[in-house]
Image (tube, helix red, strand yellow):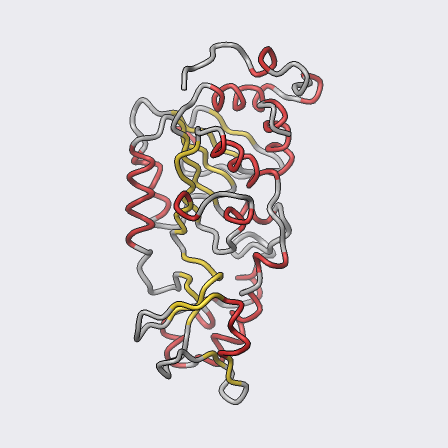
Length: 270
């Protein structure tokens, strides 16, 4: 795809209204338009714009629940009823919430052939709901869309939980008789090796890395931007600074959905 040196405003005069676009939004739209191999790293912020509660931010879920009491592998094994009392309420995230302009911006870039991958710390499946194919989304913290058995290879879509659920035990059971867990990465568990390795490979070949809605403080996912080539550029869309701000070419603060809506318009996709 040849690079176009004209500005988004010049290329899309009908969709691009300068009175609605600030300098940072215009610069990011131009960076995207000039890029051919874009990778996005997304965190909770892109999903809170859809209304999904955050875990770590002030007022988030972990202020009300101690994660070490409800979301560890130890709790799953020793007190599965307590574990599932917490997680059953979160299996339908992708069913109860819709993607926003942040998700659709990335789906647009995939359709244009510019986006090579999304590496996400989110477990809600909203990237797939926006139209991104499964093979382009690397879920480094797993997903609530499936249930997995740790004793056999069985995998179940979360929609089957009612038929797998034991009211007497307060947990879902696999056909092999073992208790199922959501296919998310719990505290005390390693990240999915394939998703992490695929993220590293994609970022290593990117010419633009978009960090959207992530504080980039949770390791090892927080180390992923370090794999961007020296020739690659980095843009951050997030309200708060991240450890990667000094390396970034652009920081765009403010509402992620609103920023993305303006940028989609600037690129002719709104």
